[in-house]
Length: 450
Image (cartoon, rainbow, N blue to C red; front, side, top):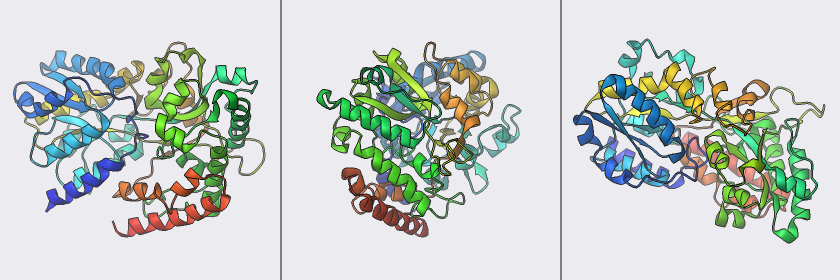
């Protein structure tokens, strides 16, 4: 019964998992031998090596370097396979259904609960209790809690991420618009986007672009900036239909009126539009920095902290007016791993203070271990990525909203009757207000059925 339940949930979840989540960047191609390696995972572990599956090619080199350091001491080799986002979950589901799972792999907030509840992940409690390198109090609380089920820990925090505003200096200069600063409000974003879209009309240039299905690095943040919550702290409700929630979504609607149309975004993608010099601003997560750092026009790309909502109208950013979602992946081990001691030793090394510092220094991702992400800000020579780190001191973080079956309501929010209507036609404020009311009920009903 457990497996049938998992399969049902997984098949639905794989279809709607958002690429906006941590590490799930749209430019994460599979390595040429990833599918073969995934199929060989169990046999490899028995042969003195560990097979590790991830989905982000940008992180491969750095993680393999850290793993090789561990191998030099342990004598156990590690092969890290990059499997593209959709196939990652398909292969993992197939392994969970009686095939072969990788020894070690990433877990994500959208899927963790179903894997933990169905005894597919190794219970790490005894390992952690005996491990001097791991004290869960040293990690971001939201990530620790995410991978804990019924009081048992099933993954170690791999990383955390934040969101920042990315802009193209050349576009702002071309159309004579002042560039973003850390003091910008969402109204400033709207005004600048309107100017660029108007001035760039003949060139097909827009001031802003957002993929509305990317919630973590997009519209979620405005809901919180204006004082509401997509999911309340107890994971049992939402305030998205409140006046504060509607104010945040109304601001998002206004920006959409001067942004690239959703049809254009759906066809091309926000990142491609931006890197084609057709968009002046987007918001993006720290897990995607490498894609822009290595891009052809990277010298024109600048980062600023997420804008804030001047809710009290005093012209300053006060506490609670600038929020960034954060999420975090977890390093998990298959419950059927042939060499669980070696597998735990590997993820302990990845998640130790030493491993987390190394991960940040190499520019792989920000750390899941608190207090060591300053190294990440210095990892990209010539590009200032400090807004991703500074927002933790100069703003507020909230953990990416989730419930037991996140994908049920996440998917429903993107459909007709919810936010799809104002996404496609942002000209009517009434449509957005109605969508917020409908979203309130959608989320409440989904939680009641969990």
